[in-house]
Image 1 (cartoon, rainbow, N blue to C red):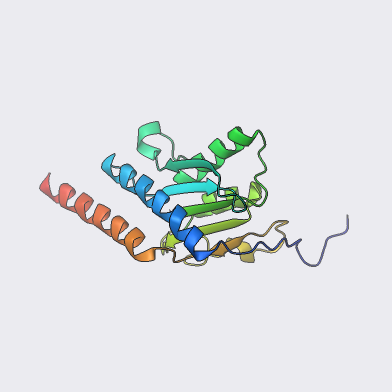
Image 2 (image 1 turned 90 degrees about the vertical axis):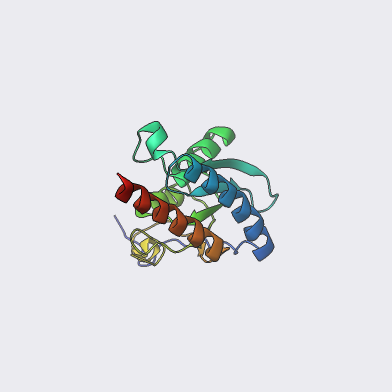
Length: 173
């Protein structure tokens, strides 16, 4: 079997900044709902960047579903794939409030998303450059465009506030 020296690249344009902010605000609302339900505040909105149609919007539900894979991104990818009747979501975009972890970014790559835009970087688990950069792995047959820092401050503040309150609750018991 012949191996390609360079992985296949399908460059996707970045989402327009106004579009990114619009969908990130929707994702922030979902993340706030997650926090109210004592889940890590992450929200994801999966949409068609050419039409603006929302295919799915989800929040973290790890605790509610007793499922360690129930991250907002995974749930949004599952819901969007079901909605369109195809596990390939070629060229679609996802706005997520926090930099995706390795599981979520690989799911986005496998689903063939075109764009992932995120708010706050995640130094402990971020797979788009903060901890590791999964896209730098050789051998991947799909590349997506990743843009970080969209509404980073409110996304980061929501996370910091959530974990500050969680630490206070732990010391009160």
